[in-house]
Image (tube, rainbow, N blue to C red; front, side, top):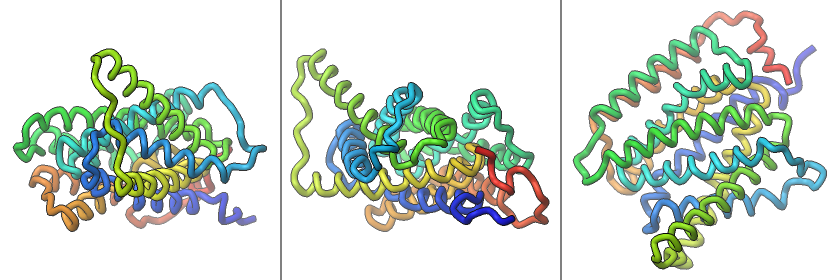
Length: 301
């Protein structure tokens, strides 16, 4: 008996692939906004959550203690990622976020009992080589760029934790998961901004202008809310390591948009590292003779 289309592993992969395409807009939008990284992360998460929450039916509003750490990690992840985009090239920031591929495997094995297959491990090995090239040589000479590199690495660890957490909460409505993660993260960032301002006796950041506010609303809804809902939905039927590898396709488009709109060029080391990352995806998904397996039937729920 065939699986329903919406519950198949193939459908889950398409959800994650679509999410990766929408995520790829983050670099160019962040570069266009003349605001600091924390402010952008706060408003993006706030608007993403506010867009999603009204469309989740009341009966699907379920609470679990795991939602709180998911939201806190989610907020921290978005803040350091956007900060990385501001301090280094968009290509470096997005590729370094995908150090998550390295962390997802041990985290999912430890917390969820999921083991990657050999092709996944080979792909992860190639991706790790690419990340090493970027961390070691992907600098374009701007001042303090190492801070952006460090933030990119931190966002990778956070992204891995978010991936595994969403996989662990896969029985929850994906729209609810994304709404709670965004709103909890935004509240945490707002509290951090206010606390830091009080501690340093400085003024709060200026509110965005109306054009900036409009762009932030679109940023939260189209680039954040919808893709994370799709990603959560995809994690219902595919494992966390596989989802992380599919989402590596995001870096293909991210630096392209930034180059087309802002003429920011990645370094040669970044391009070489990116090639290794993409080859890791190719190793995992290159057409091969298919055999019946638990993975191909879909991950049991």
